[in-house]
Length: 316
Image: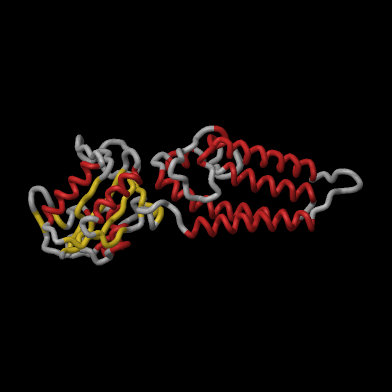
């Protein structure tokens, strides 16, 4: 049996779907492990969208040329078309390295001749096989250590199965618990004035109303894609209209504004502090969520650049 490291890449169509289909097909060849999934800008070739990249390990009783034939069939099943060098592709499968003898033919070189120069190959390769030979007497770990930053970003560790994890459940549980605590604190600590309005009540009331409107309108814009969990639903599409034209997470921003506004209105200092903590929790949750959104939607990276505000339009 020979160990092979197979590089997977996609930047055309349903990138995650193509990557998953490739991983499932590799299982039939002896898949033993796969790396986290990474996103990177394309290297060379025409202008095109960012790639998702990963590495899978195989234990296969196949010669390199035989394995390459299998990989080409898997690519063809995902409608891979070779029209221009380094062009966009639905699925790209390459033999990166192996623990067998080096291969040097007109059709195939193992280790891959450019593996030691590319961070988008080396970073996922180090996840699963740090000592993989990548040419010039170097291991993947050694080659990566001597490489400058190439803008490769690690997104999620487990991508072959649906994007569900304990992290999402913990974050939602913490969110619900904190919102319940704030509500309880407002009941116990907040007070309505008996001798007329306090000056802070006007901005507090306006902030609460604005937050409620923002959260409700953004929720309606999502429609059936609405979920409390940071993982996008399988049938969801990327929403770019309404409040999402100005802020990436308007529901979180609206909920935070509502609790902060009510705390101001009721004069609850504890409520204000806890509402600030809610914004911090939303920041942690949305950071994780955005990694998942980048995996699911090839356009999210550009959307994030075009819409820099995270929670509140025109502010932050």
